[in-house]
Image 1 (cartoon, rainbow, N blue to C red):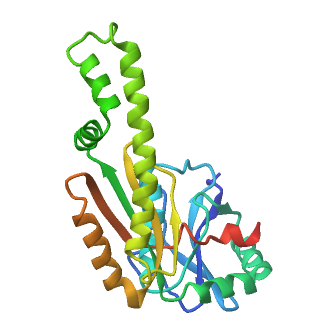
Image 2: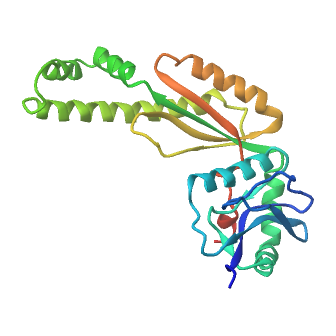
Image 3: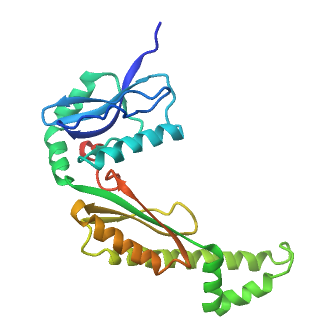
Length: 251
């Protein structure tokens, strides 16, 4: 018997969106991406084996590549990664049941994309700045310098706690500063949870396409002011993962 298959759903788009001929989906080999249309909407899908394990890095990359590429040319509502339904009837049921809410959301996100500003402190630069500004931290650093870890364990723990608290406080300030730096150039912002203990900035922004150039310049200026302390990345344009998803509209 052949393997049972289902449809992996990537996102919801306007009905006139057509996948490119080279679009690749998840799975091995990559699935062909199709559009299933219903009214003013379409769902981007590909066939997957129901027994096939999903969640490999390559699958997540394929999912994001398809949605981010789509977002550059049309509004898209991401569907939660790993959503698989039994067939076309289930896709039509989804689009029919939530047609108006999906259509309204797509209209709201027309000509808008997400960018994420992510920065990480240079550890040595941050600690050096902290020790220069905080005599208590500097004193603890002197107490542990050159001493065996066992003998200075208590001081090392206290110093580690001070560094961690300082990172958290500075992170809050840098997130606020990033938001202020692009004021007037974004539709919305969404601070994200840190992905690393030394994260300095992690904020998603929803940007209108007419403001993209000015937004990128503002972020570059923000990063340049901190280049000795923070390694900054601007990621995008992306699908609006942090601002809308099909699941949020049906839950």
